[in-house]
Amino acid sequence: MLKVLAFNGSPRRKGNTEVLLAAVEKGILSAGGEMEIVRLADLDISPCISCGGCDKTGVCVVEDGMTALYEKIDGSRRIILASPIYFYSITAQAKAFVDRSQAMWSKKYLLKKKGEWQEDPDRLGYFVSVAATRGEKIFEGAELTARYFYDAIGFHYCNSLLVKGIDKRGEMAAAEEKIKAGEEFGRKIAAGDC
Image (cartoon, rainbow, N blue to C red; front, side, top):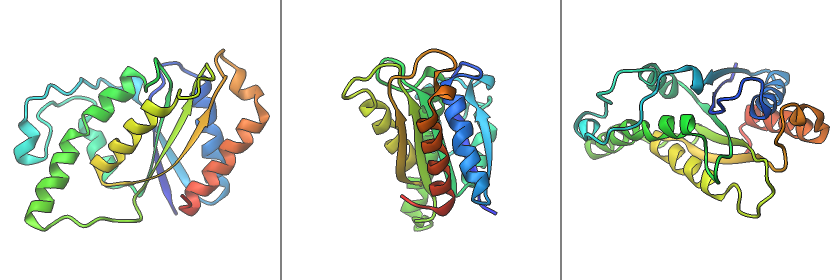
């Protein structure tokens, strides 16, 4: 059974990102998969301190809520990064998580130098995001961050589900077409479609 690991970067409980992610999960379940959601706001994840410690070992020297997530990521085949848009980017909670993936980037490139790294085309990453406004470039910064996050952790960036114009609590649940799109997105993730 395919297991999808989802990281929810929204600090708001039962907010629009969480509702959309639940629709994605429903689609994954309907296709025979399962999904684990990690709510990043519930974890104590310090920002990267740029100490260079991981440059030599591929292991982050900071021990906090991120420590257990490295193993989860290493054991995953499908990952979803989900975040609402804050000032044309992902939330602070999601950004701290992404920045701390620097240790995984270091590990990947250290292993490449030793000839011990192999690209795995079956490791796929997806981005789910909700924005209150409808700006033409509202998702560009966040999507670029997601792409480089997936590259750092050794995943192929596959696809995004991006929803504009949803702001107030409850709006996503009432947006039936967007909920259906979320379920279909989940089915595609379960199938490994890009």
